Length: 500
Image (cartoon, rainbow, N blue to C red; front, side, top):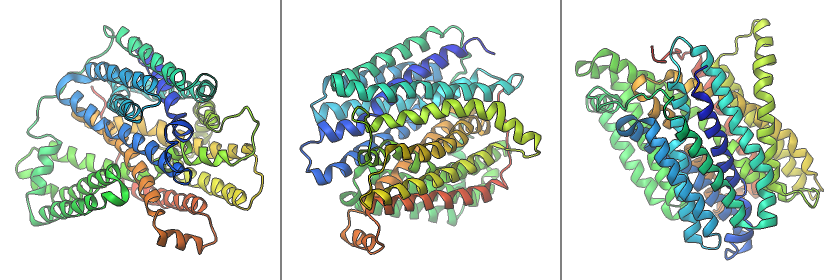
């Protein structure tokens, strides 16, 4: 095992405590303190919108971090500098607990710092391995994900208590201290790391090949133009859906249609670019299709910190127990399921002759998230019928969702790294993170749609509450995505893009 790995793992454990420590109390803090000026009947929707806008930022800025690392500064320096920005964001949350502008500035800096380093730390781990010891990499990625949830468990359990007993400054200040420790741990291993240099601007890189393909025929140009027109239409929806959702929709439409256009005409780029460059772009585009099909999973998963917390507020629980503390169950289950799967479940399935490939795990995980939301939707129907429902019932959907998370997220980290061309590790991991942004975009669009009187009247005609209807909608969304993912994965050709 490379001796530098413990420094990265320790950094990640502290950083994840800091992130989940503030994230898991954010909805509660917004509802109980920062947004008190918002009318009560609108406050839940406003808190969910702020929360998911923040998450969108966290998973959008990996694009910036990946680009800076791959092109200019390398992964180590980019991680270190953005970690300092991250620390400044935590300081703003602790200092400006009663100032909306100051608090939102802190959220922006945390989104920039946390998002910017997100794809780089996982790909930096991959850089420490080569083809001779690649077999150890999946174990380290599992340990990496285990320590993420170790930090998340204690943060989820303790921060709601600190918020209640000591106030927002302490509750948001402690995660800031942990982030400073994380930065120190990472810096301490600087002389042991394998440092891969940033790649020089390549005339045969991903974007030049895509531009060539788009301009090589009428279909590509037409699709790119359609993407531009639809993007302008998305911007026109800003008053209805908000600027963040509108900009994310612009990104989805422009990237999606440009990608389709490049795919259709990619073979024409062989006249300008070497065969290996064109083949590399083809591999990346095929990978991005899989990432797109994972986005519904993130729509469901991230709502456990918003929609599920708000549901827990309506449930019967001990007086000392805070609704947001329920989220500690997720990382606790992850820490149990990762060793259980690797030591017992996967070997048992292998002996039974069932080969559980990375793509099969991910498809099953997406389906599991849909099942979890069917259960939580059933609980909401129970609550809507004015029954006193114990919060203990939420254990079941948490367990199902967490099993889905382990199958999707731990597998996806190593899968994304292994499939990425050597010169695009940071950017491809950024696209993996971008799938989370798009998942949260679907949540914002769903929340915006139910503000329409026509939509709410249509939902009322079904006999369901808006909350229950949305829960079953997202369940169906994930189950359809899982089916399409499984069908597409059957033709996907696996690659091995570790360094020699």
